[in-house]
Figure 1 (cartoon, one colour):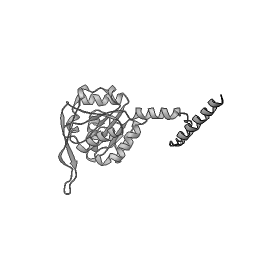
Figure 2: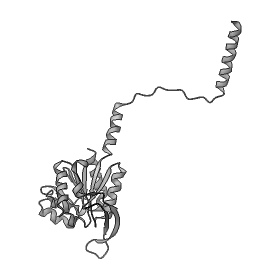
Figure 3: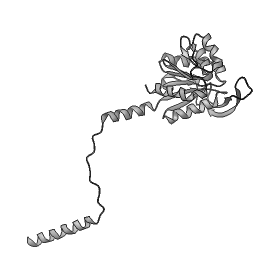
Figure 4: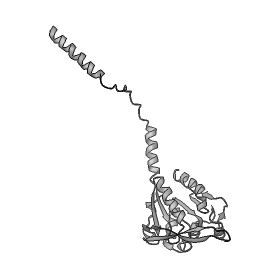
Amino acid sequence: MKGIGARATRTLSASRAAEEGKPRLPPRYPLAPIDSLFIFSTLRYKELMNRRILLVTADAGESYETLYAVHRFREAGDTVTIAAPSRRRLHLVMHDFEPGWDTYIERPGYSLDATLAFSDARVEDFDAILLLGGRAPEYLRHNEKLLQLVRAFDAAKKWVFAICHGIQILVAAGLVRGRCVTCYENVRFEVTQAGGTWDQREAVRDERIITAQTWQSHPDFYRLVFAALEE
């Protein structure tokens, strides 16, 4: 028995010597209990950041307004769908101001694919609709399928956004009367004629409708937009 004890002691000493040659690991501390509120907040954040946004434009839609919206929503983790009269490649334009001109000028802009036709769009598939500007709203406001779609978003208490000339679609849909909105200043006559109040601020919220003047209003506009979507 004595020999066995000596061998065990030598084995233990050798084991300790081997262990001493290894790098020491930091002591283990017990993990803090997971905060259920943190889990809820994380899940809620993921839910909020996966919203479905329908962007409305067409040929001669404003290029910067459109691409900025696409990238800004995607940056926030939202799903963006471009809707137009038909599914095809769209030819956008750029509206800008030049010295010596009393109004804006128009140049060719970027192209973009519309992946959804107005006739195939369903309100229940989206959380919000954004009516973009440019020259496109001039003729889109006569598209009855689009007008029905916009009215359906409003009736379903979903968010309706419009920027610049996009207000022309809201006016045609009959959603401006009794509301305070804004838009490109030289379209304000259409707002007042339709029974709405034109506000000179860059961006305005009236219940579940948020409007803005031009692409220069993007900072104010999207602050209001994302604050609303997070409610």
